[in-house]
Length: 620
Image 1 (spheres, rainbow, N blue to C red):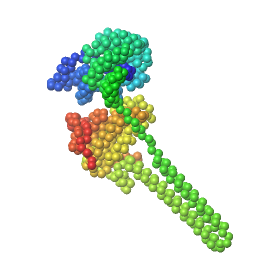
Image 2 (image 1 turned 90 degrees about the horizontal axis):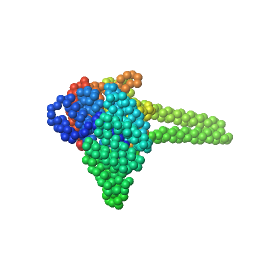
Image 3 (image 1 turned 90 degrees about the vertical axis):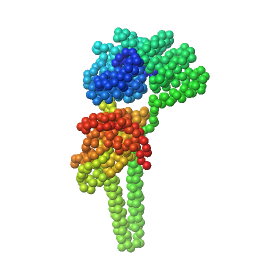
Image 4 (image 1 turned 180 degrees about the horizontal axis):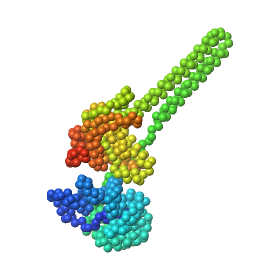
């Protein structure tokens, strides 16, 4: 078992729990809140209050995620900043417990930005603690320490010391886990333990006692370790905190292994597995299966050991998948051109040498009449001139053809084919109205935070990596790239030629873009940023044309374009958000999820949908 990873997860759980409150999670109260939310005719402030409490106190992280999402949507519709901040914190907490660390980190970073703008110091400190916890799981020690210190600095002067205690607790845990200094860690645990007692925070005290037990275990003080962890489990049972119990049960299994009591160790591992399964804790399910596999193998029970190990592999792969693919730059074209140029020069040199030899033979023929000799000499000179002239013309034509092809290719990279032809023929382009096209906008979630932490070179390299693949996807589906603005990518279907399938093609391209970003995110072999993407699509009339006389650009305008941009901003990570107009064009070929009626700025109300999957074979 990877003990260190268990311990880090416990620290992360403390970061999640300590942000708001440590009140006992009364199941009957949660049931009552859920009933009220589902059955009563509540005002919007009442709905947000109930959703906030459910997201904060529900013991099941999947349900917490559901309620935090509902709260976020409702708070954004009301422009309620405090509720938005609260929803971001709760959503990040739920994603963290479920093991979706990359998403959680982006949510917390959004929360930091908003908390700074609103001067919500306590919430800012809470976000810093949560971010440090996530970085700890990622084994990024420097960022872990950095964000714990940021949290301690902003929280130390506040009246409420809950988050301050959590930051000290977790900094001590960092010494225990990453720096192998359990004695020093116990000093920090003593300080945070006193704070938990003063505050009357039972959950904080429970984890403090458990953490002391883990430090004792590191020091091989087994009796003290078992006593502390047993007490921590008892306290967490009263709170309904099942993740912490699952982790501590697994660690108790390790303690009994060290004592040589393998049946007791198996019992604790089974209890951990049952709890993790009940509440959908994928990471803990995998760890419990691995522990049971090792224990049964040691006891000589090979068949159960193999079955447990297969289950471990299944759950491990569901948490983290790694793809091994890396693009290699193509240089074949330049190499072939260089080889062709070398061949041409070599052939020319051979012909020149042959001609020179021929002239020498002519001059050596003394018995040939002077007239014939002169004639042959002149013919030879003429042939040489014609040959060189022919070679020069041929070479010049090839150079002109290559440059023309390059110019045409460059023009087609900037303009649609029909527009490029019109510009070449007449020197101008008339603006055109297209009655029905589809427009796509994409955007990278949390791009600003990535930009702050990356060098300019790495930022440009990462954007180019994603946009180059998007270009390939758009070209493959017969669509038109319009432009990029920062991290936003805009393309359209149905512009160059009339195409009844433009909405379907654009939707398929959007799914390919999402699939590529997801695959790239899981590819640890490459050195690029792990972006996440949102996509929006709208269909309708647009006006298209070329603007400017120097550095001209092809662009499209109209309400359709503006609404497409709104579709992207109202989408979610990894989802395709479409308007009702687009939905009517693709509904027979794609399974779509109705989101409801939304107010669109400068447009009015509009029904929105998420695209889930392809229903039929869209194209033959």
